[in-house]
Image (cartoon, rainbow over all chains, first blue to last red; front, side, top):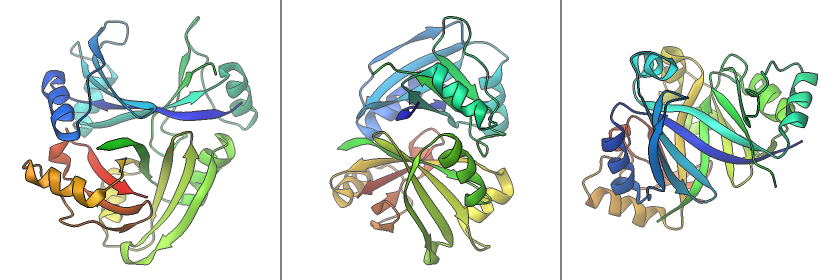
Amino acid sequence: MAITNLDHVVIAVHDIEAATQTWQSNFGLSLERSGENPGLGVKQAILPIGSAFIELISPLGESGPVVDALKNKGEGIYLISLAVDDMDATLADLRAKGVRVNDPPSGGSITFISPRVANGVLVQLIERKQ
Amino acid sequence: MLKKIHHVAVIVRDADQALGFYRDALGLHVTADEVIEDQGVRGVLLECGEGEIELIQPVREGTGVARFLELKGEGLHHICFQTDDVAKELEDTKARGIRVIDQVPRKGLAGMICFLHPAASTGVLVEYAQP
């Protein structure tokens, strides 16, 4: 198993349209796509850079982890996402080393490691087949 | 022009403890590990595909990162973008009226670097680096 890339960085913002404009004009990034993800309860905007991308998110509803993060910490980096080549092998390896990590929801390719484990960082693992 | 995400930085209390997760559990390879005396930090870079994760441990009181750790605890601190020409990038940034912290580039763990003000980037502290 291996971590193959820093896949993307997620930034929580209040106003996704304004934030998208800011990241395009201040940093020269291009908007690849944007939309709503009701499953995750967020609006998303994807801005690629190199082999990675910046993902801006803002909450769709009045409650949930992103609402809490904005309330408690304000706008800022919400999580980092690391690409793995083999999710099953990665999870087995992490568990063998004593790291608690949940299985991805059935059929999914994403899971999370708690900030309690990762020095205050919410770490997402995402499977990207080579 | 910004080329890629060079690294994301994490403030930690004890880099050796943090390496137990980032190096030993995740299997990331350490590419640099040094104390930068004038900044009062120990910085550790771990290779992560095209980008890196930087662990920053304050080694004395009174610095910005020491205050960050005291006030907010461990966690994500900044994101660094790589550029071919940090001086030009910084001049262009200032010319467009974007707030910066460093008026001129300075030496950092990732090469010649500068920091922008978080007001420029929706609360995110942004660094430019020319390795």
